[in-house]
Amino acid sequence: MSAPETATAEASVRLDKWLWAARFCKSRALAQKVIDRGQVRVNGAVAKKPSASVRVGQIMTLTLGPVRRTVTVTALGFKRGSATDARTLYDEPSPPEKLKKDEAALPTYKPLLSRPKGAGRPTKRDRRAIARTFGGHWEG
Image: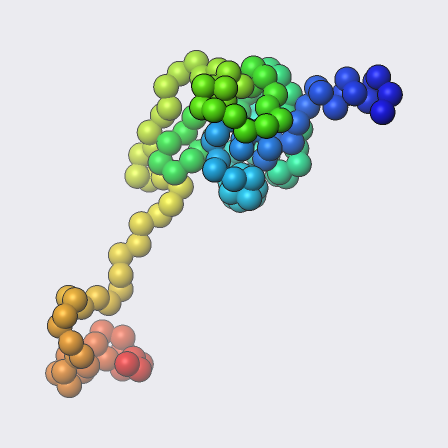
């Protein structure tokens, strides 16, 4: 490897590897999933690939669960270290922002049909009520 190639190799690192080294994700596979879901923005643009390059000075916005964090890359991490070492890879000027329920990444679902635990099988009367609810097309 010549000197210019070494200099360019040290100037950037893969996005998924940096998220893993900075301890935003527990594994590189999880980092790749976060990137594929569009939960990572680099300089305001959604990161499309886990292989995108990260450079010092870039601003990242991460939406992890109900929290949005904006960080500035201060160093490139090639290996995963302790939490204090990971903290040196980025600078967080403002505290993490809690998202409102409307903006939360994971929607909450209400079950369409639920019975109390231990209630047993539905009776014939219950089955008829369920069938009326679904327009007679329920097969239980």
